[in-house]
Image (cartoon, rainbow, N blue to C red; front, side, top):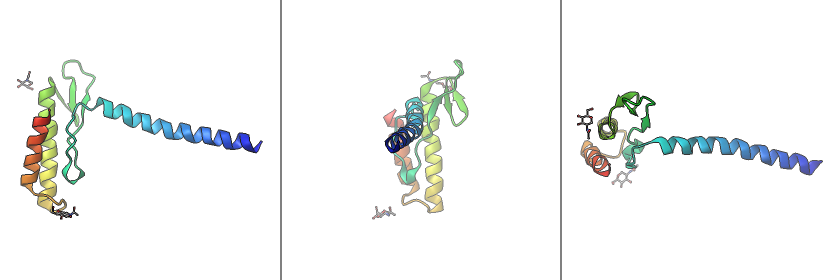
Length: 109
Ligand SMILES: *[C@@H]1O[C@H](CO)[C@@H](O)[C@H](O)[C@H]1NC(C)=O
Ligand SMILES: *[C@@H]1O[C@H](CO)[C@@H](O)[C@H](O)[C@H]1NC(C)=O
């Protein structure tokens, strides 16, 4: 009796833990932005499938006809957020660091 309760509790916890992990894995698989640099914890905006075959690539709601245009927008958005943080003094980095990161982002793709 006791053993059954413990086992089913373990089983339920495993299910609860497994669901969110697989959701995260699916989201990561969909992101076409491969650059992982993230000054101040600010990652390049994810590029996702918009579901629209004519404008397949989506970056924060804006859609693009090709991946290179989407990648450029993603890197640009990261730069803008990074520069804002640098200017606000919330990050331990300068706008020049953000600019170097933007170049690395473009070169990585
Ligand atoms: C991608 O699309 C942009 C316009 O959104 C265009 O200027 C560019 O030439 C295209 N690049 C390729 C490789 O097709
Ligand atoms: C900020 O950068 C300096 C120089 O690179 C480093 O010594 C320091 O530990 C950094 N501080 C934080 C909070 O990251």
